[in-house]
Length: 244
Image 1 (cartoon, helix red, strand yellow):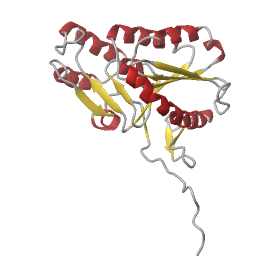
Image 2 (cartoon, rainbow, N blue to C red; image 1 turned 30 degrees about the vertical axis):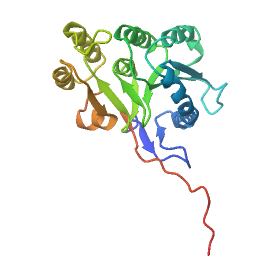
Image 3 (cartoon, rainbow, N blue to C red; image 1 turned 180 degrees about the vertical axis):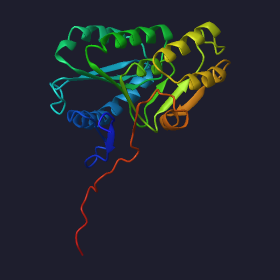
Image 4 (cartoon, rainbow, N blue to C red; image 1 turned 45 degrees about the horizontal axis):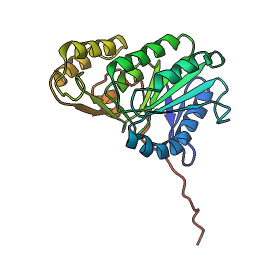
């Protein structure tokens, strides 16, 4: 259908390309996949020290992007300087009509994630907000609250997702009121009530509920992911075989 994202195999070495009713989106997905090559190199260093890395990419840095598209890559916890960076960018959004938030995060404090979510809600009338979690990337704990703010929410089937009750620091016993509040925020974002009812039973006590992007989309039909990336990433051979 015209209003839905359709996935094709991309050109050699780029992986799936996302196509939508506006033709520039295919180029955006292509660039995101290329960015991921460099971003992966930074992953080890950021994860090792538990810091949050923010990278802002526009057409000035990468001419393959449309001039009206802003990409923000977040690697690491939902924590400073993420909110500070978003606040700094707020005044500069006038020149953009699309913002893509590319997440790979273990989560963070609920109060900070709620601040991020509130900011994302506030800009949805100014830009087309897309949230994105790649194949093999993660959106754990409070990261989910940021992800569900996207009008379009794209993720890989092999992405990792984690849900647990809201706990005090260095504790694993969920706080009932705070956990119920977290679930209400997900409900407000349109997450399936059936799934949230199931989730409430899973995370009411100590423990973690791990699930893949594929399961969120196909098995539990949560409404968290609106568009699932094709698992196939066709590649062209590095060397062409010569005729005998």
